[in-house]
Length: 156
Image (tube, rainbow, N blue to C red; front, side):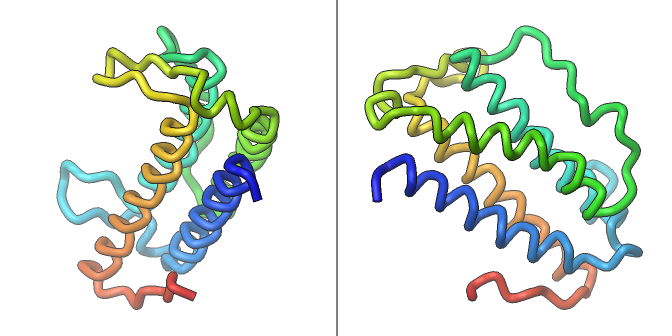
């Protein structure tokens, strides 16, 4: 297994576990949030899916985007499955983009996000994208605890 295969495995495992959490949230709790300044459960799921699309474009651009017109902005919030279905072509394109990179690309391509405080190699950036999703999935598990909703087992 090479580095690209491992990165793809990580993305697939992170998403598989995220989907387990996301689809376990009862419909009546999707708009729950712990306080007025927080995202709702569904907003956080949308944030993860939309951010992955942004990151893919930033990776292709080899840096932050001056303008980001999100295709998610025009989508009404409804269900987790609707969010996943809408995001599926973007996700597939992102995974295909990752498959197109070589082992050498992981260290030689630099992603300039100086506006966010960093310039990182492509490999580092890809791991950050998966980590971003993992952090938000952990936050949702905490949301569920606070909302007294049973939590699905992610460590299978």
